[in-house]
Amino acid sequence: MTPIKFVIPLFTVSFLLSSCSRNRSESSPSVARDAQATANSAQGLYNNAIALQNAGKTDKAAKLYRRISSKHPLSSAADDSAYRYAQILENQGELLDAFDAYDVVVSKFPASPHYSSAIKRQETIAHQVAQGHITSSFIGIKSRIDVPRTTSMLAKVRDNAPRAASADKAQFAIGEVQQTRASGATGMARAISAYRQLTRDYPDSPFAPEAQFRIGNILLAQAKEGNQDTANLDRARRAFDDLLIRYPKSEQAKSAKTAIGKLASGDIQRSFDVAEFYRKKGQMASALFYYKETVKKSSPGPLHSQAQQWVKRLSGQ
Image (cartoon, rainbow, N blue to C red; front, side):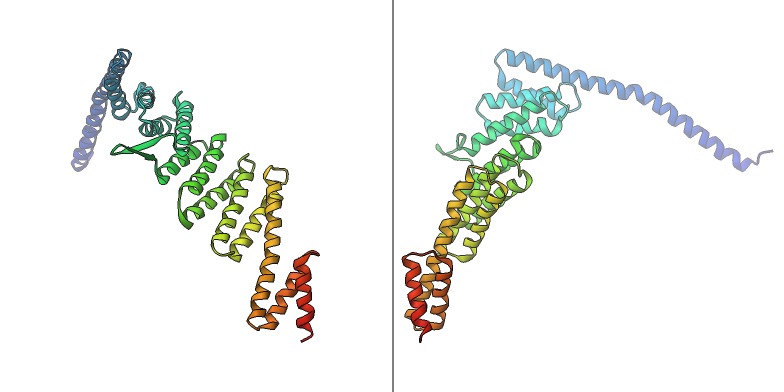
């Protein structure tokens, strides 16, 4: 005989299991009905939006499209609604908002047939912003979109399709925006960083030789502004040398060779100037060292001859 103390627990478990099973079977049709109701609601809104758009009532249609994509993201009409909403914004000239709306298609609906088109539209808008064709207006005054917003848009274009040709083009544009529109040493440092990222991540890009050449030019300009700062001059020379090594057949290689030649010539002149400085201060040992440096680095010519004469004169003292 089964002890009475085990009967009650067994009965309780049996009751609970049957109750859960009944609840699941009863709730399944309810869940299915709710899902179907949601799908029907989304489809109904979508049909209304299409009708409104066809009737020229695009503002009302846009609101419905946005509502469908945000409130019913799992519905079959969600991705098309998101794309149509972005298109309406673009057609109305709201290009920054359109860029963000296309990004919803890219980020939330990667399986959408509109995915590639949304990426392409983002690319077009971002480069228009970078080139200054799209401006913002404040109290009737038009101005370019600021650098952080512009570069963030270009970065999205790069990251949304990192293996596409649009990626390295966007990365180059980031460097160009920083170089031409940002100010001060910080802007130039960010430009160099962007160009270096391009040559590192996309070494075979058609934009890579130009990016490497611009690194050298920025450093050269900074050296001139800093009274011929030697460190920047050395970094510029290395940048041009890297260009010749990595892209010897590029159009920029010839210009890099010219720049290196000018840097070498400048080094000789600087050595001679330093020698003159020390001589005039009466520090003849230091002057002699730099005159010898000038002779060693220079080819036969006026500067070479002058330095050589001073070497002879100071060596005899």
